[in-house]
Image 1 (cartoon, rainbow, N blue to C red):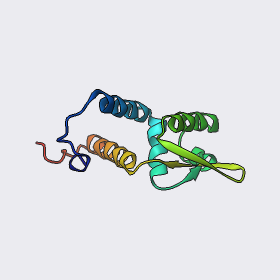
Image 2: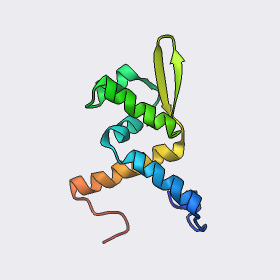
Image 3: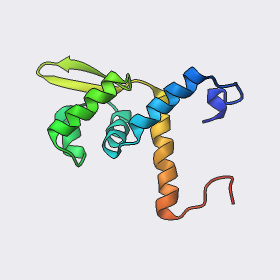
Length: 114
């Protein structure tokens, strides 16, 4: 993942600030779960609420925060609001974070490290 993002470039304050802001939004388990679900495709609030351990009100609030941060987009489909993730980079970041967690939970050594 690092090679694809041009990790050899110098980072500046603006890029670091944006990256830190994205990571702050990922730091909540409910938001991380919502982003993981949305990485598989569009979902409405009812479907998302059924799949996470949170109330409909809480899910809606988290989605609102993610939308304001530009991490998800919403569109109206009749009476439903349908959400989707905005970036393949964000999907990859969520997948990598959960992959890291798999290593920690299952006690699997990390790749390339002893």
